[in-house]
Image (cartoon, rainbow, N blue to C red; front, side, top):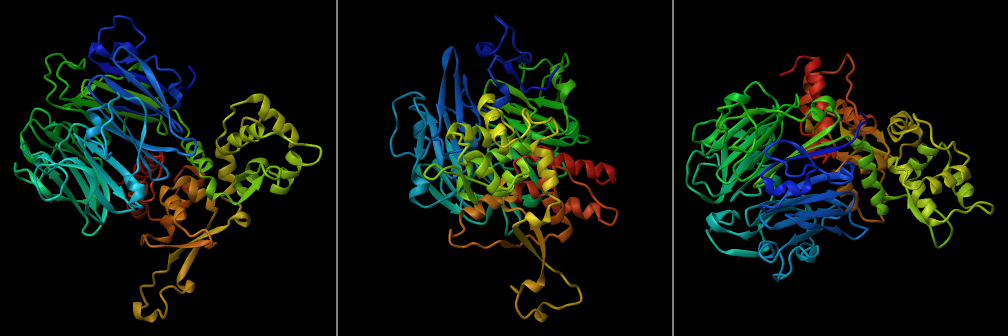
Length: 603
């Protein structure tokens, strides 16, 4: 059986319209008949009987009970970064920091728009508020009838219903149609599609805060009094948290050490005991959790061993006979999953009100990163093509993939005797950037013009070329400056903190940073176009060894330590790299760290 992505669904029978079996008897995992599952990036469950499928880079499909699917496409210059949902509403975040909404007439009352639309999921609408206020949206989440937005790096805004103080504005009740500022120094935000509360992490102080409905103790603060202002969650530092999410009456927290804690209603928090503080769930004490999904009352947890545990589902899962599903129960996976799960494959779990999804994606995370790079034309450093019809490109990447200079490429493709059209050029660039062969005939013409072998050899892949580029110091055009820490030298001995003599340099290709890290993309996005700087200082206070390992990972997708490196220090310093550097391939990076932990027997 060849590798391919696959989507499975379980839930109530009204969802049978997207499965292959006629008159199928859910609950059981049933393979979906959604076409081209290999292009699915994320599935988002909205209301009771509909969901949205994100198909990269900017295409969406909407499925609703017994109705023909709807297709949407954002403008060609927009690339989807994330999608969140609640009730009848979907919010879409693009790489440009813009927000878009899709909702029915009821849902439009929950999103930041000045008007309510009377249509039902007719079209995607831009949310212009953030652009008008010059706010770049880094991330967003939704709770029940509410939205939360992390803007300009660390500024938290909220909008929607403020019932029970769920917007964190210090008061109870009211409807905020436009986003309202909450506070700054926020690094990450969390909620749940059916939650009337939210959580966030701050940098200074390093704390986890919660706010909103707390009638069941789901805020984890040690009481059952709802909070209109953010309140610190005891016993946890923000830097210790991997993720946290809430259902209607419970919350689940997973630490970076992969421990699972629950609080709130004992029927659904997984501990079996009503608690108003986060309590370690006994059934998962020996398990390392890596992914969490929460619906109205249901919870799914995926472990590092690709074991799936669920609870709060009542009769929606075929579990051990006699189990009431109030406690975590191991759920049997389809044989396809158990046979083909690999460390670099991404399993996505999702919970809606009445349905749950499993999606196994055999995607190549490196090529996905370079697809994002391809969309960011403003970061290119040269052009190819004839005058008036040039296409911006990244010089080092083209030379790496073709083993030709940019001048040779230009001459062979667009010289007097050779000239390919724009469609051929774009087909060629898709192969260069992310190994896609979209039009064999056009691509072959480009290869022939460049006198390259077609089809390209099996080992002529993006991964191999980028890994080889790591060793090419001569073509590296950017430097990361790491401050040299000298234990024998006092701070006052430094006459100039910005003196480059106080820094060690890590050479790197600028386009690698742009492709692999959302942090660097955002940073370069705000750099003045006239500023041609080829270096940046790193202020993370990580060691030079850790940064070098991270940069090498950007090229090779692997973490390897030498005999003289401290594995415990490296793992500790890189544990927040996914979040801080905004890495797209969380699953692979964390599996590489886990491999190091196992190799050196680290807890």
